Length: 192
Figure 1 (tube, rainbow, N blue to C red):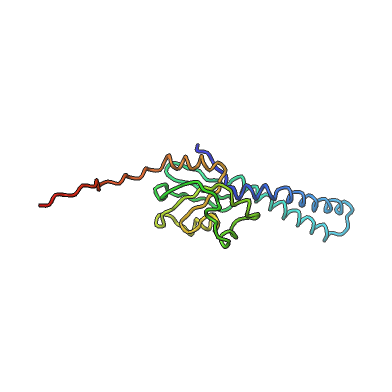
Figure 2 (figure 1 turned 180 degrees about the vertical axis):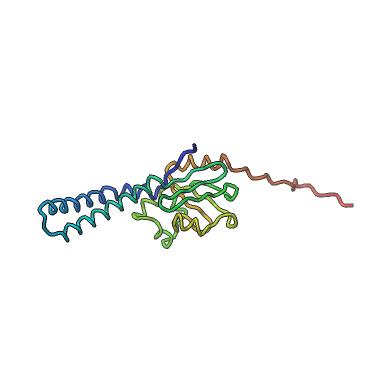
């Protein structure tokens, strides 16, 4: 089975928010338990329980996205799966080129940098997989809805993943090499 490469945006979101969300949910759950043992103020108990349940659900959603959002090469396609959203196959023959680059080269203007998560300066030096796509063969609107605006800029798929060089190697090993330019030779044809 091909190796899964987790999407870095989702992994970093979980790393950044997990402790805060889980601690705050536990702090909200504790007063509900303490007040609940005394048997008074039912409305306050419900409020604390509701806030705690919401925070646990948000932490669970972030964990799901970090754990089950990935990209990998299967047979003749790049498969991108985003947890809670769906999956899309991008045929390798619909890719014009694939390379590794820093996010700084893609998000070079301030209006584009607004798409990056904060702190933006930390993300600009992150290595990412850049794939140029053909417009005709892929539903770019569906792909943009699945991944978000920061992962699809024009026809360029910007995919920061864990283990980007390995994913690029998988893609390049399955891409057909471009035919060499023929003709020319530099000699003139004889006149008749």
